[in-house]
Image 1: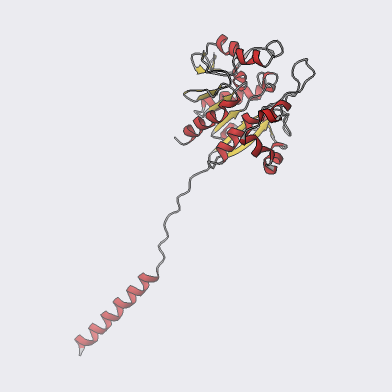
Image 2: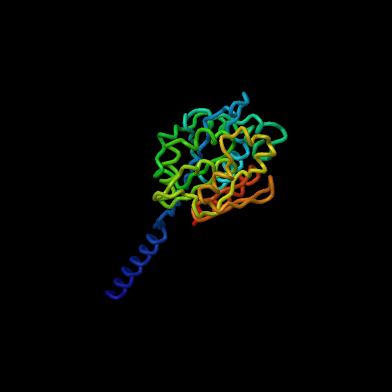
Length: 260
């Protein structure tokens, strides 16, 4: 009888244990990947020299990289020297300059609102971002080139081992950027809007300086592809693109670095 009772108790215990195990919820640790953050810096300058015409940033050079990045889950913050709405080069919104990305931009009310409220560059902290991207247009040749906040920001990103990317006229903002007393572009492979392309748009004598010449003067190893064709150069953390058609290519190279 004692053996039977003991067997009954053990059987009951094992049965209960199995039921408990069946109802237990195993909580697996949740693996979360921090979203990468990229800062876009746009010009606040809208006057094309003394021509009486308007300039600003070039839509394709902003929209193509912006969508390339956000479509891959990258968070983008937009800043400018003055904050608020940065000027758009009117020629970049003409039908002849339209691309799939600019058309998407035209219908993107959320991005239009975001663009109208850019953050003041002076309020930006490099530590909050994983990389910085500068779209071009002629505007940067007048304001961002000599903007102290921009210069120190680029230096800070670079010395903190974070990618810095520029397209078309934007590499001009590297003109006065130095690291350890030397021009950042010295000995670096770079590209940017060519002298031939500037001549083709009839602005050689309007711009304050020619980008190609300025980069070479600072010791850069400048190269270029065909006029108006996609061409981008990567040298360590520094990524540069030649013209508007190179915008997406620069963003793709930046994405690769962000995923390392």
